Length: 425
Image (tube, rainbow, N blue to C red):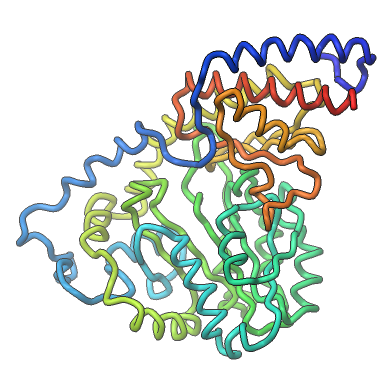
């Protein structure tokens, strides 16, 4: 294809007319396609059906350690399920707290504790202005949490190796108001990048001006590989922090939300013994214990980390063709046009597309009018403000391959049309 910037005005006008005619045809179909959230598809959810059959009679509700899972107690979760996550995350089991179904709840509570209780230096709220570093593009729900608490968010550019660590180190070491940074270190949301070994080591060796600075390490996609022949690996942050004498720096989060059931999974947080003193003091007041029957289901079904790895191979069979449908369409329709650039991850749940500057909102609007719902333009930036209005997050997991193909036809058409309009303007 000829790059649009090299076309004459007459050629651009003719192309615009052609694209508009095709676009009107799609609008007339009355489609309703949704690529807005990274929800597991129906086929993926069905893979976890046996999870519901592992509990027997009422007399079979005790864990292997003798805990009666029907009753109160165990504020930090069932030991068996904590052990599975400890193995999966590569941390000591005593560091792991198992909670409800959503790691987002654990992250929200960890920020709330910083704001109102603090981590050994008094509450963040009592110290004046509070700031967080936010690698961008990033996860919209992370940014919503810090915005909710009135925390000032500072953009840090993402690279294929992770956040721009020169910027992170400079800011963290010089500003005691910076209390945290959001990270999705493996198959990042939305670009699908995995932090390099050097990046992880630089995180572990940070020298924060704030003694109560914490790394919010959301390892949501640590086992979410979908390519048979290629997968990323991530250096163990906790190991590196211990080597550096910084074991109190990380809060590590994970869950089975995209492993078993998003609405009925298990979420965990792992952190140092010193951090657990603060967190446990809150949990003992906040809860009389999580859903231990759900913990028991997961412990019996998965047994160990190997059980999770085997289960995720089943999930990959559903995800790989969906990502192929998205990436094949992007490559066939947009390569060489200059209308967009995109990532090609080997794991995770998203594809990040950068359309021409100033065009993301236009593309999302065109898609919506033609029946395709995408994540809001700007959502992957704090305050929903993408300074260049370029980034769009695509979520291939939920629709069928056929629906994805149709949705991507419309998306690529919208990206082309927006690019042509920009060149004409």
